[in-house]
Figure 1: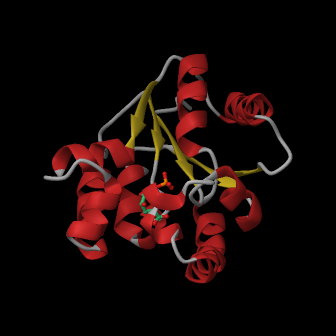
Figure 2: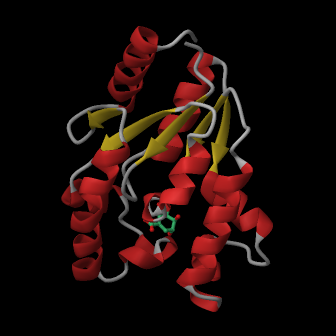
Length: 173
Ligand code: S3P
């Protein structure tokens, strides 16, 4: 089976954007960073501005619009925002026409360690609420994952090759 899309899911700080670039380079795909696409179709200049000056519901609608626009994308690695799994339609659109979903499983403590400056992540401002969100989402990420990589103690290089090895055993690249 040919791989059309690789979709990276996981909590903030799990490394989706960085890994998407690395993997795309290795397998000759184009990277799409969903958060960047959301900012492009908004009237704001950053995700935090969208959420703070408008509201989270508006941000989620834009996120859904971007997911819908990617239904027919192919030969792409998509770095999603951590909350994309909140609407089932987003995942249906992202995986439309095939697509492998890889969950970057990072502990809450490690995710916070990787984002020392939380100002760009409005949903990480209050750590108690953020940890509750993390715990609620974990089962949802697991539900959508075709493959899960535990990332905490691994280098980017290790995670990247683990994903590519898995892809090679399941798809023609
Ligand atoms: C969010 C994650 C962020 C961004 C927005 C909301 C979330 O993306 O989409 O701040 O709900 O988890 P990253 O996962 O790339 O940080």
